[in-house]
Image (tube, rainbow, N blue to C red):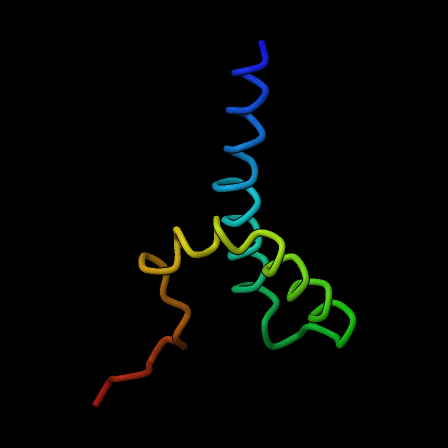
Length: 68
């Protein structure tokens, strides 16, 4: 029971919340207000270990960048 709880909490901390943050930031980056951006930065700091796991696999450059 305890092992299951730790697995669920670890999965939330390392996988679910960081992916949700990445999706939220990708969708709202250019339309965020000051307080929303401050809150997102706080969540990025809080969930940094999970964010760093996915950083090499996600690309948020604007589409069209690099086309010649």
